[in-house]
Amino acid sequence: MQVVSSRSDVRAAVAAARRDGLRVALVPTMGYLHDGHLALVDRARELADWVAMSIFVNPLQFGPSEDLDRYPRDLERDAALASARGVDLLFAPTRAEMYPGGEPWVAVIPEHGADRLCGASRPRHFRGVLTVVAKLLGIFAPDVAVFGQKDFQQATLIRRMAADLDLGVDIEVVPTVREPDGLALSSRNVYLTNGDRERALALSRALEGCRSLFAAGEVDAEVLRALLRRSLSTEGIELEYADVVDPETLQPQIRVGRGTVCAVAARVGGTRLIDNVVLAGISADPA
Ligand code: AMP
Image 1 (cartoon, protein in one colour):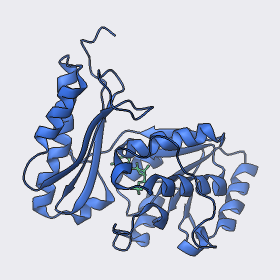
Image 2: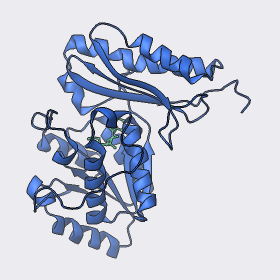
Image 3: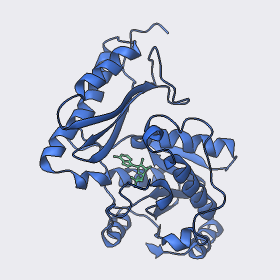
């Protein structure tokens, strides 16, 4: 595996892959890799011949009081994991390499869908995400870029950006990878104490509850919302949102159907966690 930190080295490596006729995939991450990230690599490998991963903790997507400075980082460990999983090129730029002129003059600002769910508490977050992803897509010009369903609002907005700006890249979304007990893998899980981790299981359990209700025929979104709120109104969990939305428009639904997303965000012991499920079970809804 090649490890590079400059955009020009990336361009040279991609050009060489293209000369060999290879299909190029990109897996953008903020590092501190876990099996969720590595599942994206596996999917990228199925869809392309040459797989690149980026690791960049993007300051533009963090708010002033968020965890940018303490976000976990371990490039040596990440490089070993990426290499063992078959990544061909790892791009780990500095902040100055990505933003040589400091804060960019031009950013990608979503017109819709970024002001609710995670965007309600993180007002400039998706602007930062879309801007860095647009830059990475510009640097790599991949055939396909792979993201996780874990950040489903992000995946929806990136898919929209690629379509609306005709970026010429396929956006692939991979199901959330979980611990055996249901906890969604996240780099931020290292912040959790043993007690927090136990309490955090309420998120995936509440979402599983929605899945079961839907499978049993419940189609009233408000019933699912009430279940989420009830399950997450316990001591030690500070609920930020619990919603039931259309995956394309991100708008709250009245009746749910296949593809509807149940999504939650909550603070557990000061750590902000998000999780979601896509409803796919058998529904009694005749529609
Ligand atoms: P991050 O490093 O947290 O910014 O995540 C990088 C990519 O990995 C994003 O596309 C995430 O949605 C994806 N990802 C993070 N956690 C998981 C998970 N548990 N399962 C699948 N994909 C994930």
